[in-house]
Length: 444
Image (cartoon, rainbow, N blue to C red):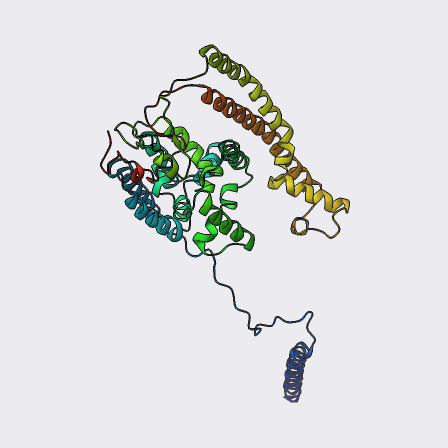
């Protein structure tokens, strides 16, 4: 009995010891956790904490919300309606006031409301990029590009008359338009062809949309632009006071294509149907110098001499083409240096050689290693190769244009009265009110 009591006492004592040890361990763990939290609370930061109360405000999204898809279809429908209205006002109604009203509408809608984008001029690049790459073009962009050309094929350059917002601003500004010397105008007339070729070449090689980048009127329509571009915009408008439509005549690449289409148009601007009085009022009133004089007077030059000159110009056509191709070949390196890939490779190589001083932003933003340099050099070489071929093609084209102009000036076409040149006439309707034998109704 006594032995059993002693065994129970020892068991209870051991249990008390185990419970006491467990309690002490729990207290120690709790104290350790508290000390760890205290150390974390009193410890120093590894780096300065971000300051959220600086007064900085996130700037608003400058791009705004994307336009709904149906609005682009409305734009194409409005363009079609405006082209129909221009054709009616120019060819049927023969109303200069109506054309002016259409100009104001186009400047407001296609210019300030749409902010000049997407426009028919810039769509040249969209179509080019779609042809030479996997760039996607919507049906509305295609319509914006093609509709003015289709109307030009049938009715002349009615798009330029009152639908193009760029032409509208310049036409309204032409209040003191003066004549441009014929030879100077002929030389300046090559610039749109060069501009068109370069725009197609840059878009085809992924070099960017240079028509949109250097559009002088987008800043006006968007009421914001870099200071330099605003000076160019204001300068062109001020120049347009004395030289009518300077951008349309000596820069616009889309006007070149419109001129091609308009050359085959059946319905075009006609000043009068009666016998011409020879007053030259229509010729003097045309701000674009697009009125061709009559050729009823007898030609004083001998026929043999005229034929000799014509044969000479035809024989010189291959010379013009070869000269243009050579000029394109030798200028390809200079022009390709403005391609983004070529320009970036040059900057990176200068930074690596230490010739550029401080590292450029381009190099800072790239992880420059041998693989990156290899890929960039391959893209740059491909761009240079494409520019070699493209500039040769552009040179051949310019040679054909120069030769064709010489041949055209040597040909004789009989005209009984003053006529509008279908290629250069912008269908503004200024000449209608000056013809003493014209009418305000349609002239058949």
